Every structure is written in C-alpha cells, then in structure tokens.
Length: 298
Image (cartoon, rainbow, N blue to C red; front, side):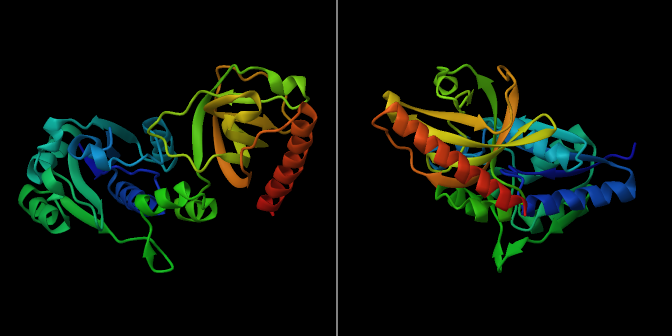
C-alpha cells in the first residue's frame, strides 16, 4: 500500500494560501502514487475551545468540500471537532492520521499548529515525523503586497464589503451556495421575476446588506443577475432574505441548489413610497448590474 499524503486544517475559504498547500499535496501524490487526503473540522475548532471567538465562516462544510475536490484532492474528511479531539496533543493527532489514513507524508502551512493548544507547530511536527517515519513538508505563505493571505484577512474584507480584495485573495469571487425556495411571488407581478434562497446558515459570513450585481451558477451554466440581500422595507418585512432576479432566464428552479457570487454592491436597501417608484429603481438597478457584469467580463 502506497499510503497517503495528508494535509490538516480548517481551510476556511480555501483561499490562495490554502491552494498552495493543496498544490504541494498533489505534486507529492503525483510523484509517489499516493492518495491525497484533506482532513478538516466541523464545527470550527474555536466553537469548542473558545466559543466567544468563533468567527463567521467563509465556507460552510459542503461549500468547502466542493472547493477542495475541485482542486483535485481525492479524499475529503470532515472530522467532528469535539472536546475529546480538542484534548489530543500533536503526537496523538499524528498517530491518528497515520492509523486512519495511512499517512506517509504530511503537508503543512508555514504558520499551522495543531493538537492541544496548537502546540504542534512546524518544528514539533518535523521532530515527530523523524521519530514516527513520515515526511513533513512546509508550504510558505502566499503574499499580496507583502501581506500573507489568510482567512482572517478575507473575513475582514468581506465584512466591510471589499469584494475586490476578497476575490483577489480567494482567487475567485466570494460566493454562497443555497437552495431555491418559494417566495411571495411579487416580482413576477411587476415584471421582475425572482428566485429566493433559503435563509443562509447563521455561521455563514455575508457582506453588508444591499442590492448587488451577482453571477449565479446553475449546474454548469452561469447567469448574470441582481440580488436584494437584506430586509424588504417596502413590504414591511424585516427578515434578511436573498432574492435574485436572473437575466435571460425564465425556468423554474424550486428545490435546486445554486451558487451566487457577489460581484459589486450597487446601493443600500431602501423603502419606496409606491409600486411605480420601486419598479423604476429596479430598472435602474438592472441596467447598472448588467453594465457591471459586462465590465467584469472584459
């Protein structure tokens, strides 16, 4: 048995730094014929060891799985992060990886630490590898203007609505995967039919509420659109919704899963005094969103 090349971590967002780690895993499996394995956690480890510090997530588990497998990783392992797992020291963690996944090589990011108290830093793990008979490779930071790309950096950008910076560091636009559900059907009555996504999980980080130009992936096809993210004050509805008008698309999508990419924020959510005022603004939004999407393709 050839065994596996393993990497381990939260991999939230699967950003360009993470992608460099995965590329090294794949380079090593290509050279050795071993299996590529990524082990990640649910919930985020901080939800167990320091709940007050738990961040909102760039990628929920299924989003992360799709991003990881799209990179070419063969085995995606979602390990439940429990109090018991939190108490494993670095040596016990390495034994578990070796026993459960036949680890022969471990690939780490330059700043990664695992095991109880994150004590399993690069030096500790290299010493364990020498003693236990597995190779350890360390991948350096991927930097942008000298700054290491990190999930924390990207979360700050998304939370402040800096979608261009987030996309640059992610290597793709920031997105959400959601299931299409039935809405009130008002859009169709005013000539702007919409799809509604199920309310996002509270763990998912969203940019500031507003009206956005978006790109929507449905299966292997992509469509442009505009999305109202937030309440619908014109109709007295305060709950946050994700409601999307797709351009050049009229099919039914109820029950389907789509991926929505935020492209650019167009304006704040606002209340309108009349149906005509709402329709007029939506037409301006549609023109602005189309222009934004056309520029993004150039």
